[in-house]
Length: 468
Image (cartoon, rainbow, N blue to C red; front, side, top):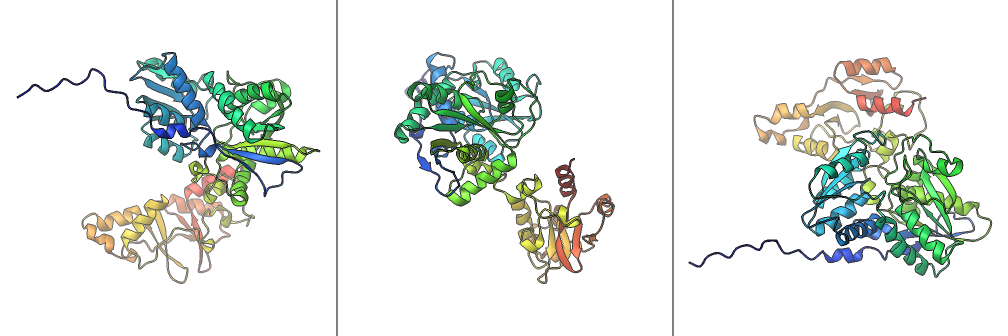
């Protein structure tokens, strides 16, 4: 028998997927159904990049630059601190080139982003979003430490990497210039790493010095206050992802910013949702901030101008957050007219069809599947007349089926609890706490009419929304 051939010393490098050629050259469309004052406002659809964000551009540029100067070697590990989108770009680009990718992501990031980077093969370390530079769990400090500890690791450091702004100077800027027929009066952008603003500032300083650079910044970020006072203040907190900072990034160039707007989270989310309803464009949370800033700028102008801003990433990454009515209400970004009683604590209203429920005749399998899809552990049991007749939780189902899985076909009424803890809307918080102390969930009834459930989480969310 002939001897088996020895395997090659190194595996042949795979060709990167052709999808990487689709990075950049994104469309530019005009906003036509929102009030832009005297201006014409255009948005560059960076959500059309392969992973759905503008960060694909810089991920490709930074990886290729690191390969050229040999900071990244075959078999190496790419490490980065990211709000999610740079991580997605790196997971696509570096993963396609055969590198291990390790991302450090703050815990406020949407689950869609985290699931996406993991699906691309990246490893994720989630860390705290409520700590600043110098804390061992601050996402950038943690990523830098991991890069030092891992042999062959390359710390991308988008906040200080010159390939980041260069990507926008050499691709994003020229694309806008050509698409706008060499007539751009203002560009509205945000600062996350600072690369977009720095790169576009350098490009437009060269080809069109009169083009204004405008900053849209989340409330809580230090950047707009710094531009107005020259002082670096203490950062607050904000829910918008990807932009806003608690420090001045090394690559940030704020010197050409002529106007800056502080945009509260509620306005960012509202404007982003309006962009979808009115213009049919599904953008993410930072898109809402940029568009809100651009609309403010446009409406202040006393003469017609041509203004450009960005759909930074896809709203598909925020379906569980800014496009989720219940998340918006729970976070206090959408407020219903107050009732002045326990109805203000009910997140899911039965009369509006918002309650996930089962009927007494439904099977336990149906109930279990609804629990899983809604990510809840208990369901109210509501009859055809709209009356709450029971409650079913996971333990009730488990007791019924553990010895005989065929019991999943049994009706809900055979396992539900019909000893309900009901409260009238006018009951007090002490009454509600008493229900919780008995280990129950409160069912709010107006006579025989079921209004909804109140859980401990609902009460905590209500109290948080009402912090003085």
